[in-house]
Image (cartoon, rainbow, N blue to C red; front, top):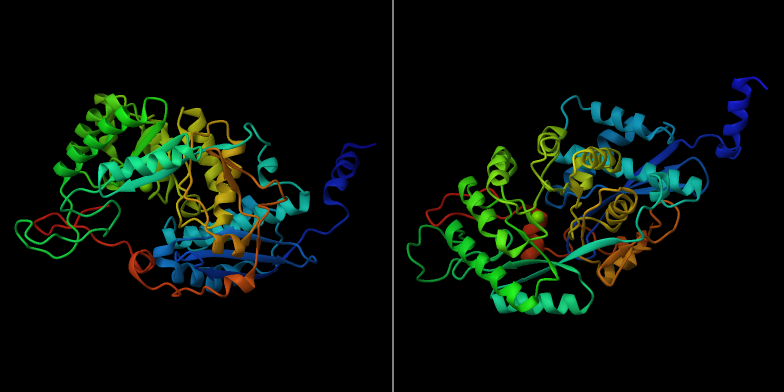
Length: 432
Ligand code: MG
């Protein structure tokens, strides 16, 4: 048999005698079952019942992602074959000429992840199998504990530990200032000069209070539990260096976002002054941001929000780059990642050798009714659902019960309309 004939013969069973599927339709499922706007792209192929889903969630600008998919990617992609994921990713990425922005990257991710889902369904395998298979059984997760008072945070941590959590992120409010997270507090009456209304954040009291939290946490929770903390980019660089150094005795699993993306050159200073493990990257959109930190070994964990980077296709390359430089993965996994996105995170967690930890915010009952087949967490580990592709089916009737705007109040309104502002006591707005 001639070589060319042999190759054709060898490849035939993989194609199963079927023509390559083509993209027949693209739609966007825009739903907020738990009050946070989720965006999921659905690709239907010209083959009966063969479709896929991808996470495109950028909750603060959700409507723009819907438009980017419907108005630009859909006409660009209809009729194209689904099999060349890398080729289609590069074509989408270059199709706007100007690139690496969060709206367009999320739109691309929705398509990219849906194509991986389709390929997994064709193969009858979970996506982690397409990435080389499991190199661990399940993904270690960390949970969130926060409170206005230190005792409240530690009570919550104990509760999570009793449920099996091996790693917990601790955050505490600062008396008289904004609670953790953006816009979470109100300026107290009689708290000095009232130059502004609304949440106030000052670096020094925040640092003092957080150090007290961890001192107390190690006394009460012990040495075994892995503890994490998110600075949320609120400290000026010099204060961040001092803070990371002061946290050293508490042996963190990692300190997250000690600097804002605009200040990442200062990671060299933090590295030079302490051994606190560093995590960064949930705000990154572009290789220009993660490349220098990874290749220069300036962080220990890369925290990219997978859809923000453009989907599974770029994320697996980030993981490979990290592996070569001893940087582990800790993909962003809060409530503004759809269950489809969580499945993509877990596929990477299971298949990439340099997995570090997975953020896990859990999924509510309504979310599980919309997204059938959500991955589960047990005893501090997240598991894949083991079905082909992502193993998720979206119940579109359920999804339609929660159109954007269903929960327009409080925290949900803030998240879905924009990331609330926090200011210094003198009124200066801060990056966070
Ligand atoms: Mg964070």
